[in-house]
Amino acid sequence: MEISKITSPDDWSYFAKGAANILFKYNGPNDYLRHKLLRVRLLKQEDQYISTCELYDFIELKCKHLFPQQIIDIQLIVLTTDFVNQLDSKGNQLMLKERYGLLIPNILDGDYEKQVLSKNCTLYYDSNSSTTNISTNSDTNKIDSVIFEIKPKWLYDNVSSNYCRTCSYNQLRQYPRHYCPLDFLYKRTIDTGLDDLFKPIAPNILENIENSNKIPLKKLFRNFLNNPENVFQKLKQYQRINSKNDLIKNLSSPSDVSSNLSLVMTLRDVGLFIKFEKYNPNNNVHNSQNNVNNLIVLEDGKFVVSCNIYDLDLKSKLKYKHWLDVESKLQGIYNSSNDDWKYCVSYNEATDADFSRDLANETVDPSSNNEEMEVDIGI
View 1 (cartoon, rainbow, N blue to C red):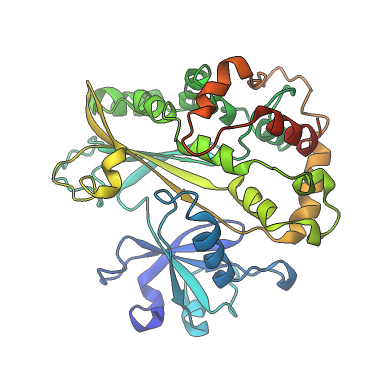
View 2 (view 1 turned 90 degrees about the vertical axis):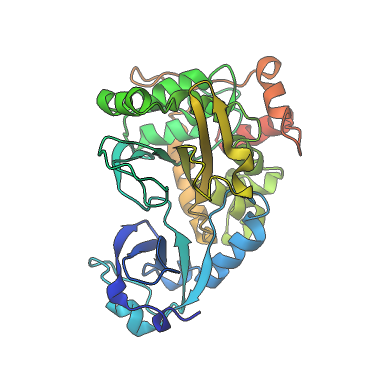
């Protein structure tokens, strides 16, 4: 589909940007494009550039079967140079030679307020009623939907270091501590992880969500994490390195970066939208087949908890030098001590293995994973 035949650049406004892409939000009258975002590539050096077609094939062929219900729908569309040139990119340089873009759903479509909790975590809550929810409520304090946007980064069984790879990297970048994503992997540490995750939320916002609007947010999140098939467990499963050739320490040229390592490094940098909604019997989406397994019934009511994965960007093989450089800088942090950072959870096979082994399709082999971490993070 050629986008210029159904819409004009004036129908799109700047929404957000990352390191490689820029997003535009649709504001025009076309029902098909309503609630959609247009993703266009930012200008990159030729040797580091991965085309949109290559990226699309990577997601469809390498990623979607791993997370069939959670990867957001994407549609490949044809761009023209004139169309891209006329987009209001807020001064960002676009890859004008790129002939394709992606249409993706706008998970944040609606009237959402947000609170940035940390570098890789943001809380959104609808300040009226999201346009994706069917509701006639007009009270501006009415909240029917809450979303956590999280980048969980590296998920694995930490066996011997004081700090995991993600927390070590955050210290390297001098970010303040928020939470450790490894706490979400084990039943014994889920509450600790949630307490840390929720700590920066403004008390009045949490009060409005949980008490005034009767959305038991922490309880719903705990329920989500206690499911052994949850997205954190799946990401951990598919981030595993099973060949020594794929360990970062062993890379010496772009040709050493295998397709499996490219996939793993992509999964170590994905973003998640975890959405908590009050169930609405008049909402066709809530009643769809896709949400059969997302319905949660508590004494507080009936809710829909869903998760979408985004930012599945295929990594350039030339990034191997960057990966090596980062790991070199982290060596002095993994087993350091920092009064502002409590130690990360250490994997205990006796207490933690059963939860991991509940995964339906694969049993986690701790000895294999331990060998990976011994080399991969330089311990």
